[in-house]
Amino acid sequence: MTALDSAHAHLSKAREVLEAAEATPELELHNAAVSNAVISGINSKDAICLTLVGRSKRGDNHDEARQELRVAGPAGQALEPALGRLLRLKARAQYQQGSVTASDAAKAVEWATRLQEGAHEVVIG
Image 1 (cartoon, rainbow, N blue to C red):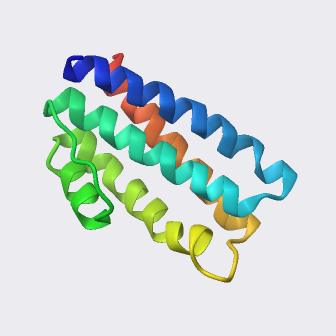
Image 2: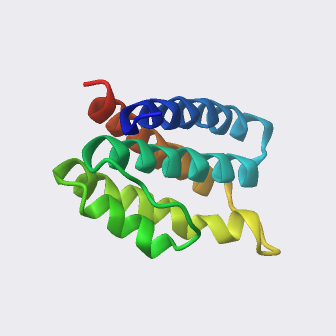
């Protein structure tokens, strides 16, 4: 599988989990919405990096993921703040005792949408 094939696969996955993120706030599943938005954002980052740089690292280091997107060129630099915002919500939605709010979920979906649309522009044109 080429880097571009992998980018298309990540873009498809980003869209799929973004659709799930968009559906869950109506069900008041705010933690699930944020979690899905984060997964979408990470897949969008992978699609961008695979297309522009030819590779994407896998791992749990959020700073590395943000740095990887920043160095992928102007498109990555423009989208890195949205990824950073998503990643800051990840722990609260997935690991901490407290939950995210409906407002947090709406913002996460907005940021993931921005990333997915940016990835689509980079990968598809």
